[in-house]
Length: 264
Image (cartoon, rainbow, N blue to C red; front, side, top):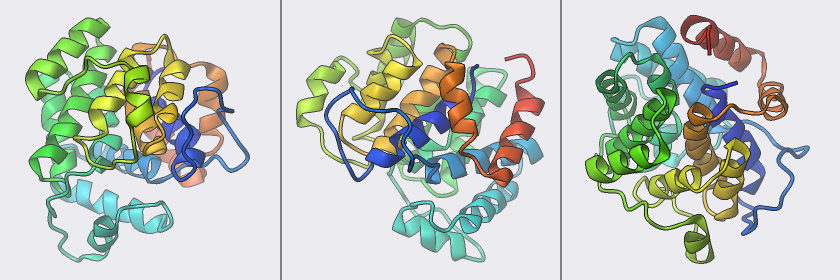
């Protein structure tokens, strides 16, 4: 299985470690309290937008607000909470990793890298219009799209380094001892991409991301979104993640899968 479940699985697995950091890859993937957070909620809001009308910014804003307000305890950033209540919400210059955590559906809908970039830009700009917020979404979406069409890891790495000037030369083991919680795109997206580049499969990617001891659910969602395009996700992981979605989120997930990914 491939697709946006890569991001959702990473979010749910990382959910118990966001405020309970660990520095090891040896942990239980799913715990009793493992649950979806804002990463999954807003990924599916973007998915719903794409199902409805990918050319409409109003549809994007409407769905982000709708999903966000239906799940007020999702764990959003403070400025996004205020955005959810605005009658005419405007971008607020965020450079945080929320733009990257929700972008994965754009890469699965696009028919070209250019279209993926355009959709990623649109998905981010309504809130995260800071250059770093845009950059994080674009870099993540590019990596997913390239993985989806069969690019090799080295090709993905080279593309991201050249186009977005992220340094991807460190390993997870290099980063782990000194890494701390960081919600910025600049301080979490490159590390999340490295978690994919330095992994042997989907599960290893998620273990890498959680083991850094940072913003575990979001970094695992970002890394998992790329890994979920590059490798098959084990059914045991995918099904456990899907079964933790409630009815409304599951309905959107199925709608997106049926519309855009019937043969994946």
